[in-house]
Amino acid sequence: MTATTTTHGPADSVVIRTRRSLMRGLVHYRETIAVLVALVLTLVFAVTTNGVFLNHANMVSVTHVTAVLAIIAIGQSLVICAGEIDISVGSIFAMGAMTFLALAPEFGVFAAVGTALLVGFMIGAFNGYLVAYLGIPSLIITLSSLFIFRGIAYMLVQDGALRIPLAERLAMDGYLAFGSGTFFGFNNSVLWMLAFMVVLHLVMFTMPFGNRLLAVGGDAKSATSRGVRVRRVKLTAFIVVGLCAAFAGILEANKVGYADGTTGRLMELEAIAACVVGGCALAGGRMSIIGTIAGAFILASIQSYLVITGTTPQLYLVVMATFVICAALLDARVRQWALRLR
Amino acid sequence: MDNNKTPLIEVRNLNLSFGSFHALKNIDLKLYGGELIGLVGDNGAGKTTLINVMSGVYAPTSGEVCFAGRKVEKFHPKQAIEFGIETIQQSVGLCDNLSIARNFFLGREPVKRILGIPFLDFKAMRKASNDVVHTFGLRDNVSVDDEVATLSGGERQSVKIGRAVAFKNRVIIMDEPTNHLSVREREHVNELAQQLKEQGLLVIYITHDVYQVHRLADRVVIMENGAKVADVRKDEMSADDLEQIIRDGGRNCTDAA
View 1: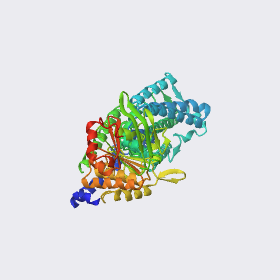
View 2 (view 1 turned 180 degrees about the vertical axis):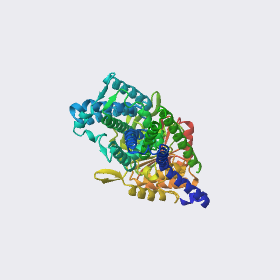
View 3 (view 1 turned 90 degrees about the vertical axis):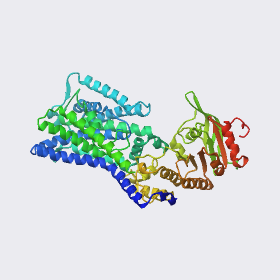
View 4 (view 1 turned 120 degrees about the vertical axis):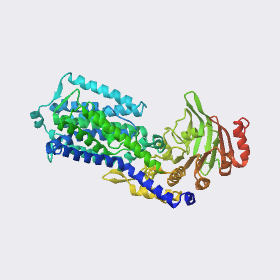
């Protein structure tokens, strides 16, 4: 059958080879951009704040905010990769934080962490079941979950808040392990983020489950025809994001020892923004864990920068939106350009 | 055909409805290993729907399907694949966003266990898909790490057929396998279909083209409006007769089956 290739002369094959390596590069291209942007921003922010941005206290805060946001966003990136979306993660985050704070004083830290994770698992399974098995669009289901669990969060604390005083926290066994302990001066939430990054990166890109999840997001029909259990894969993705969001809630509650009805509000949108900035395609089938973490870092840095420079912090939302739009535009443009080279 | 053997696929009294639409009507069919079956009919005759039932995509409304004499209880592509039914379809089968190697093994990825954790065996995936894909006519400058999005229609078909051959299958269903292919590629695909049959596989070849199928197949099954209207051995009927049946919509051939 080699004769069928005669239509391509040597000149054509050079073009084709260039195009192919471009497409191959494109897979990693977006995450590279996200990491580069993160580095450049760090540099610019450091210079324009006379180094304040990079000082230890600020970096501790930025990396903690990054870690908490990144853990949610990594989970979100799996759901987005499956071609779905979970906008209830902010509420799951709140439920995780509250469950932890409510149970830790009485039942101990580990039981509280376990129960909070179970709550995240249940909410994720609830979302995933309705989306995957009953075929209801994920936007509608998770919008409902967002309201349901936000409502429950408000009801749990009425107008007050859940809190554990610092002295009491420090006296608990194992308390320091979940975010408030330090590691080389940084919160160990960063270590947890790295653990999530390594595990989920390996799962996504070097294990059968990841191959199937990418396939489901890329072309669900073809995945089905190869025997991939699409619904089960989607359900799993929703459970993972539920666990991630609840765990992020634990880390945050552990550090500040406080949660009220507004805990984690807008976090769902930040998580989606981090994914988009990090190179996940909202249509599914294309994602990057490393890029998503870079995206979370970019958002956390901007937030911190606005605080340091005394700019209206509300501007953060506008800047975040601008980044999302730029990322989406860039993605569309570059893909079109690469495909035109065919 | 030795009709004392157990059919590889047997369909009995099969009906399938989508709401009020009766897509398959009382289909009875026995298909044996070593046969090349031509499944023909007009657009909307129900050919693809029928093979979708065989490959587990749709569950029938009533009637039964048996694989090698065993009744199929649960319809899922996974069951069909495990039995050894490989379906090559026009528009599905390859995910554009994955590399050739990843597509090749999608759903049955080879793994290497490290501490009991299953990691993809990339080396095996690359080697097996590379060997197969290049014997099935991909250009040399195509790497199995390339995304399927960069392949042409013919190249995609080659990957699908190569994959179907590489896994030890018992049944190969080809749904319009030569659409969008050049003349030479088409001949190659048809030769492959013959070879697979000679190896003892059941090959179901779906097409519009009665003349092509008459040359190729041992037996021709004609469908019309969701019903089987003819099931004849090639030597019982000429291609022109077959075409006449299709043109008549199966009205004059109730005895042909």
